[in-house]
Image (cartoon, rainbow, N blue to C red):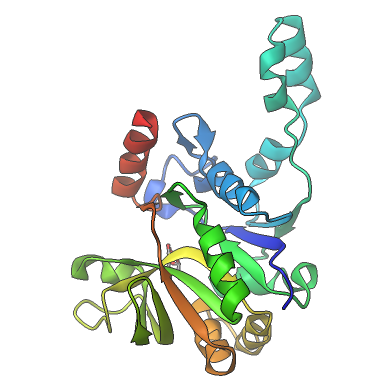
Length: 269
Ligand code: G1P
């Protein structure tokens, strides 16, 4: 089985829940204490051994790219001010970051499909940076371990309250142990009262390259938002989809409540 070496980070959303804060600043650049959200996801993946990062931005989101590029002017200013200890912020040692621009708001599935030439024929990780996970071991690393044993697709899950189920992909499972399960179906954002279980998808995935082929099929449908979950369900029929209950604490920083809880938790930490 090929190892998981690459991670895709989709950051093309409009961030409507945080307007006007997200008018000029992308949601993923909002600070959690002193680092933008996207850095937490990159740090998690690096700690788990990921070597290459593919960042899918939207149009007019130059702030994300600038953040990761060396800034000679800032470097000079810090040197002049004798602040050598801060120089690594001006020229961060981020290697192997590739940026691709999604041409429009065509959904999470389309953002992933847009990276197919860079991902190639190998399993890959997906991290949605607005889900921040506080844990001893990197969450994506736990998923990689399960993938190394079983292959197929692997998805992070957590128990969600019935009143929040409409915000997430909710899974149907066949077999179940304490933290691991086999997934037979996923209902994306079920209408209140129709969720097939209380297990919601957290934005961490290891995907079989077969998912790209299923996305390819969906991307031919005109004017539709392409869901990642449909392609995972289709791929799972032959390759299997495993669920892992996360061991850390997840903050949905796509909501104001989650973002504020994360700010407090990380500040206290
Ligand atoms: C996406 C997925 C959803 C998942 C969620 C996790 O939704 O489509 O299945 O539960 O991320 O955060 P989004 O938050 O992009 O609307």
